Length: 399
Image (cartoon, rainbow, N blue to C red; front, side, top):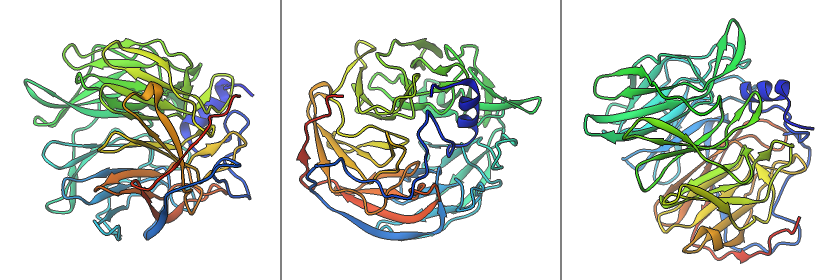
């Protein structure tokens, strides 16, 4: 079925809804594409203190990974955090001031992490206008600046100005008179002043659940969003003018995975306005601010991750396939140009998962954390993917 208004609103509130006719629950385990030959290796590293999915995670300057919020095995938002050390061993971190899911985490130049908004109940009725700051030197949280608008499922990223560090917070979901509403508004947090102010410029349309990445120009690309009318147009934010510019995309999609090399951005998979789960990819070129067709992946999927590594390779991991089954599939996208890249099938994950976190750390590991399993239940497992292993180049699907 198509992305109707009622489906979209439900989708925005909770990530575990059935979308476009593809159930996120299944009794069978997903895997690599049929007939593929896998290379490489994955390994179970550790377990989280508690199962969680739809969380946020960032790599700290200390080398540890901070995992915050998400939902537990019962679907309830969590206030707890986890720290994962260099040996991928997990231990409890300090609790946030409130349970959060649909929040964002922004690493700051100081080494601290700003946690922004989200909602604190399973139904998405309580959308937060609060922020808090994690200090790794004291392993503690302190209150951050209040948002001008409560929002969840927004995007946020830092940028530099002559006046100091700023954080853009744009779009997302809020509540108006008890009803879900999707936002086009944006605000900017002045990190040093500890103050958030509304931005005069807005996104070209209301959107939530979008992705945001940094370009080599310093501009920010926002794409893969969804609004009450369906899929949304990408926007480029220019920090110099603090304005948004809509960009034409070949195939508008939501639930895609997005990874930036700076000069090029890979957008892969996702769900189209018509409800199709895609294997296709597109490449955004920073210099021209245009999209072009990329190399198709070997598997259609949504709610997966794409992580760019230090050498430029991009690993596409997990997600939900076109039949609605959580998958174990891992693919590597490599080459000097993403438009003519090689897609290689790697050894699949040990556990199918989606809405997980994927963090690149060190020279040989990609850390995969939590997420939902094939039954839509939060996982407590951590896996590592050997990014130096040899994969098998694959012939993309023709349909």
